[in-house]
Amino acid sequence: MAYSITADNYFQKSQPAKSEELINTVEVLSLPLEIQDLDDSAYKSNDPIEFNSLETKTIEIKFNSIPIKDPSATAYIGVLDDDEYILEEDGTTGEYTNATMTCRPTYFAWGAELVITNPIASTKYCIIVCTGYPIKCQGKRTLSAIDDEGVIENGVLTYKLKENYLIQKDSLAQIIADTLLDTYKIARKDISIDWRGDLALELQDEIEVPEYNKDGILTIGDFTIFKQQTIYDGTLKQKTEGRKIAETTTTTTLAP
Image (cartoon, rainbow, N blue to C red; front, top):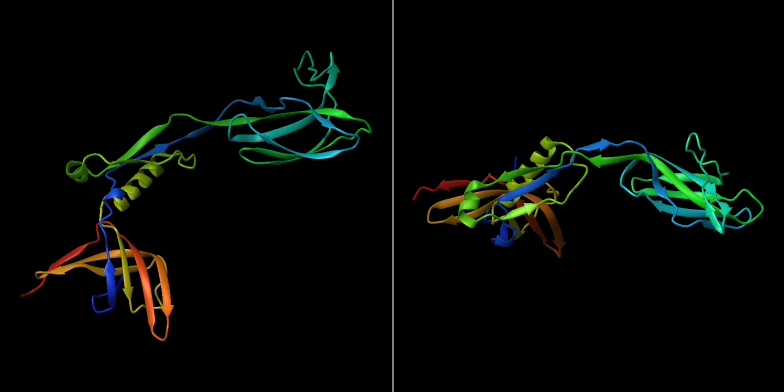
């Protein structure tokens, strides 16, 4: 049950119409991800990295495509060939046959941090190769929520949610679109009141505040507290800011 704050409780109330935040069409992308075939060069060094005798270095790499599932990085010792350090392949398996350096990886979705040690008591050149399974979007779709009355009244005011690969199902994209539309389809949204205060109120609590009280008509709106400042200078005061909860306005015609 919402906490009721009447006109007798507050000293000042502000509820401006924020037309610049008005939205009547929301578009959210659904980005289903699928694991692709093994990529044997999810990362490969552009140039060999010099390591002194028994030297240890920390190398950060970034995958060619993001994200990568089951990455596996190897630090090969380059073989000198015509003044160039190269990787040699097995003619049958296609695998690299170079000796390797010690590599302790820490993997992330975007790449890896590799602690590499040259185990040989002479200068060597390292070539890093990382394999893995790319995860790519297949079947991108746009889910929409539209306030038809708002479009007729104000024209199309569209908000497109930035791509987010955590949104992989159409049902989730639709829920997000509907929720955003309910929040932003009304111009009069936020309220700010300076009032006597109540220390029991917390962020995300719901409050009821009169929005209009004139000519025998009383309109009360419901709000969720998103900011609250408490002031004590011998008397208790609070400045409470609330976000309008869509479709919860109650209008009553008062008896003359």
